[in-house]
Image (tube, rainbow, N blue to C red):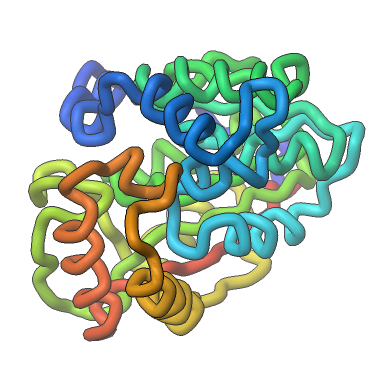
Length: 291
């Protein structure tokens, strides 16, 4: 097998600066809202932990549990430098850095998330271990073969060019490194109802089948190690949230509502209908960059 490196992914203005995607996730006053929630929890900036923040910064189906189960398949050690593609507020990045005592670099298009996420890293004492930067996943500001592992959690639904995405991730990974993906993927034909958590309209939604991801990964020099459909896990997660909701007299100090505001119930309802019908599902893919 050839050991030549794949070419760097081509990038143009339309893909490198997706203002429609960044605008969908933008949330002004986010850091103030989180700080208010911390006070309501009876905590301070000196006592807050990554577990306290998990309800707001693990912004994906299954939350922290999904993160743990995905990351354990990467084989991360304390010597590794890990890449978080589409880091959001950096919840998984902080979890990885604290759990494995390693370095994590994350990139995201949304300035509000990156700025707030770096503040949260400093609050929990991980400012030296985790760095979040604003960048497109199709043109990352990193050197070739810089990382020992990478993951992407609920990001690919906003990236149409899966091929260039996988080429760019391959570029920055060392040979033999693993790349873990946990995205909402298409599992059957059918129309989606909008808005959903990742898109207000179809124009910014790029949901694709697992086969599209696998083909893109293989063309970029990866071998597929495993695939796992997490539909039942996702439905159980939301059923558990619903079962606990009637007992609450008010919203939790921190949660998805902190990020999504009044849009949250409608977005999640539409997503769950499509998951329940079998049109989409959260899916894990684990790949390894070949030598």
